Length: 345
Image (cartoon, rainbow, N blue to C red; front, side, top):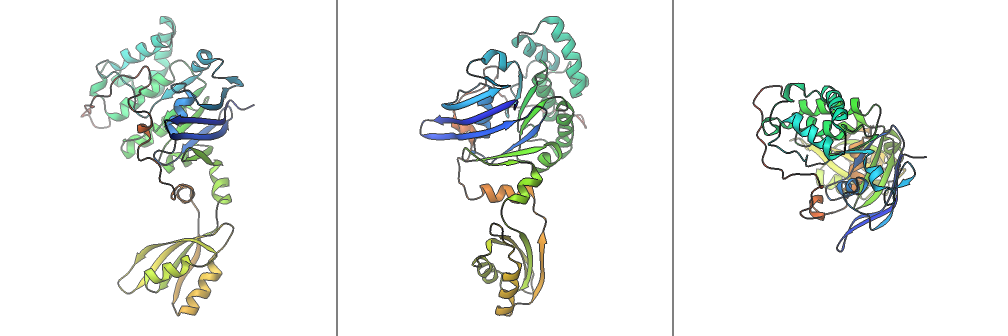
């Protein structure tokens, strides 16, 4: 039995269907990447899982138990780090973690013991007694992750945990997620494909509220669409791109670069199950275009994501789905004051 299961889940905001018959499951111990363009329904789905929102249809269960029938028990089994990290910025980092433990009904001795563990695990010893409004965003994310794992949840839901971080901070938080996820089930929403490849065992892609792909990265890339081909021709770029786009074996052609001498490189995606190279070779010969390069390119998660989501035009900002709503324990998010120390998270 899967630990987390969504079946035909629907969520509407007025006339807008934010989540449309979403069905997927997560097994115990999996780290699953949850991908989709802005407005696709990622954050709404996560808020449904964490019970900040109620579904309008379908079922959500944890370990076989419906969240509708067992809300309090199942909420305790989930740790959540929202996209807008809900920190009380006038508190000290350690004070905030203790406060969140009390909100969750933990006893004083349990809070002390668990605080020692999560502070060490998330590497925030150096900022434990510092006001949150003096921390860099990297350290604020660490504090947010510390509160999310404080009650030892078996399920961890992370919504864009590296958004707005610099490259070094991204690496640190990604490593931290791998560490805290070794004995937990994790659902990770992100726009950074490198994080998915390095962190996740499986990917679920949502677009316009519907689940459009679900599986391992390798299986999804291999199983969707046709071959991806790199082409280099001595030909007018627009004419060549249009001609290749008209071939029955081609789903899409894009110009990569054109030099001053008129030579152009293209990325060509084959139609489903098709290798367009023979048709491209015949086209070049028929048009008298010298063909300098024609080879298969390794497909990527980025290619798959683009193929499955590029044609849609969802809402620009998913957070606009439910104006003004914050998770119940989330304070206002006043402007941060970055710490000036180098290497500060």
